[in-house]
Length: 269
Image 1: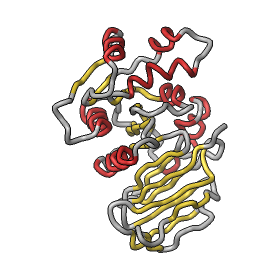
Image 2: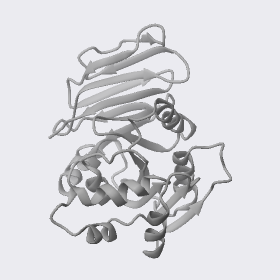
Image 3: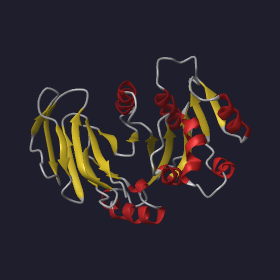
Image 4: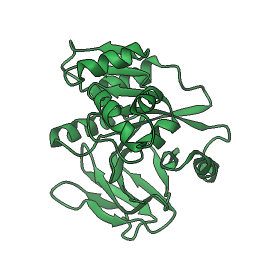
């Protein structure tokens, strides 16, 4: 079974993330790199939003996420003119059903050359689903030697049904690496058809973590690197799930017979 490697190097400054990538390259092709796309949803921007923006090659706002960039990005740079910050942090694309974005924000970014895609006719998928589908299918940002990873800011917190909708996107696009982020934690899917090696960036994440079966119960999950490791353990809602676990080692391994959600806390530095 192929092993997938996971590393939260996008939480590190670029010079540190290069070193982190090198440390996890032993299980990947020597020429493999990661290309990041950033999706911003209509929740408060996490404190590391400018860092995510810097790592990303493509920046997409899902509908009202554009309001957040317009209003909140200047707050990270109090000594700079808001107009300068807004022109610097201009999304490449705004996509969604356009029921949340303010008209003046839409007009402002359109004037700066941001691409606008109105999908108000589609009420069967969420704005995040629309953005992920676009990034996956219609943007040539990843070459053959690179793997795509979509970072989603503002995916957690706020309305519970929105959070569940965002987690559902992880399952609907299970072959695409998608990481949901808030100020407090990150979540991503560990597909059952791979074993997983998670490189912990202890300076910025942990120690609290969790593994939760999604879609169906797990008949057998085995881990290493946690304080309370699982050993062919059954997990299901209504029974045991591995919440409030603790990262013990620099590398965590996971193998399961069902898809799992991995979550780890993000430190407030």
